Image (tube, rainbow, N blue to C red; front, side, top):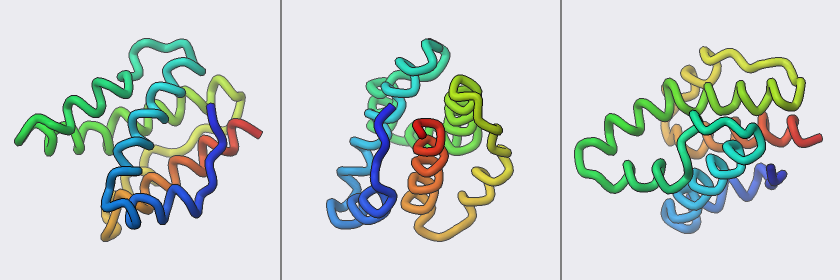
Length: 116
């Protein structure tokens, strides 16, 4: 897993009009899958591919936010022997406007703690 600057994870999706956000999802899921050795975590290619399918990308986004990301974060935390994050905190961030920027920053902060 790569430790990333939280400022970069927060501002780059805004400055690149979402391109860095897509890159972050792909790379982070690939790294988490490799780090944990758990093939039930979707690959970055699968995450990106489902983002491209009209209508299904809305369903996939909800699945990512409410299921896949909390599961991925908890598996990384378990592998790093860190206390696990409540899925409720991750889901609560969905309610904040501009959710993706806050959500991605929060997830990256949790992953950074696992790397330390």
